[in-house]
Image 1 (cartoon, rainbow, N blue to C red):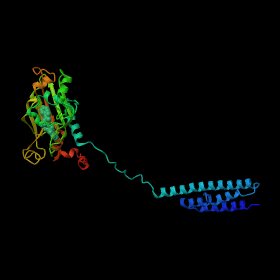
Image 2: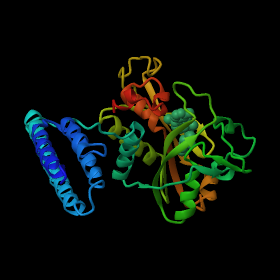
Image 3: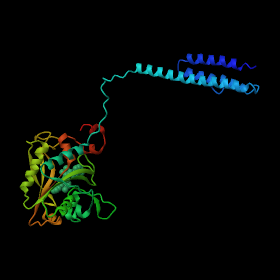
Image 4: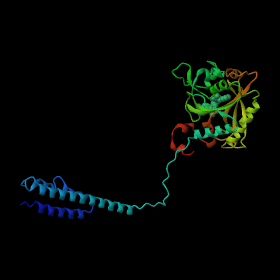
Length: 344
Ligand code: FA5
C-alpha cells in the first residue's frame, strides 16, 4: 500500500493553513509557488503517482487531482478576499472630499486679431454693411491694374509684393482687389460691404509693420453716395470703436483707386492729444485710408461713373488693437507667446 493519500492529506492541510496565513498578495504568491507551482510539493506528489502499481494509480490519481482542485479554489478565494481587503483599506485611507472645488481647466481664448475683427465686423454690420469674403491669392490685374495702378506706376512701391511662381499671380497686398470682385458680382445693384482678410507685403518687419496682417476694407456704391456720407459713416465707426467723445480728423492723402483720398486720425488714446510715444508727440493716431471710388475703378467694376458713385476705406485691425491697448510691437501678434495672448 502507498503512503501518497496520507502525504496528500497532510500537504493539503499545510497548504490550507499557509493560504489562510498569507497576509498580502506577495505572501499568497509565495504559497502558490511552494504548493501549487510547477516545481511545488503537489506537483512532486502527482509525479510520484506515475510510479505506483497500475492497480492503485487511478484511485490515488483521483485523490491527488481532487486535492489540487480544492487548493486552487481556496487560493482563488483567498486572493479575492485579500484584494477586497486592500480595496477597502485604500477607500478608507483615500476618502474623496466631494465638497472640494474642482481643478481649473486651462481655457483657450480668441486671438486678439480675431477679437478685434469680430468687433469691427459687428460695428459695420450694425450700420448695415454685409461681409464679403474675397481671396488671399490674387491676380496682378485685380490687385493693381484694375485699381488704377498700372505696371511701372510709382504707387506700386507702396505695396511690396510676394509673387507666386505662376506668372501674374500674387498674394494680395491689400483687401482693395475685393472691391472689383464685389462690384462685378453685384453690378448694377447698390453695394454696402466690408471685406475682412489677411494681406501680405514683402516688407522689412518692424515694430509697426508685419509681412502679414489683416485689413478690413469697406465699400459703398450707389447713385448718390457722397464724401459727406463717407465722413459721417467713418466718424460713427470711430465713436463706436473708441468711445462717443473721441475726436477724429481727416487729412488729404493719395491712393490711386480713390479720388479725392484721405486718411482718418483719432485723438491719441494714450495721452488724449498732449503728445506721447504712441502718437509720436503729434497727439493723433492714423487708423485708416479712405476716399471716393475713382471713376476708372467704378468702370472696371461694371458701374457707369456718370450715374454711380461710391466710397471706400481700408483699416488695419492689428494697428487698431495696438492703439487700444498701447501695444508697442506688432510682432507680438504672430509670435505665439502665451504671456502676450493670455492678456486678451
Ligand atoms: C491700403 O492698403 C489701401 N488699400 C487702403 C484703402 C482702401 C485706401 C480703400 C482707400 C480706399 P495702406 O497701405 O495705408 O492702404 O494700408 C491700410 C492699413 O493697413 C494701414 O492703415 C495699416 O493699419 C495697415 N497696414 C498696412 N501695412 C501694414 C503692415 N505692414 N503691418 C500691419 N498693418 C499694416
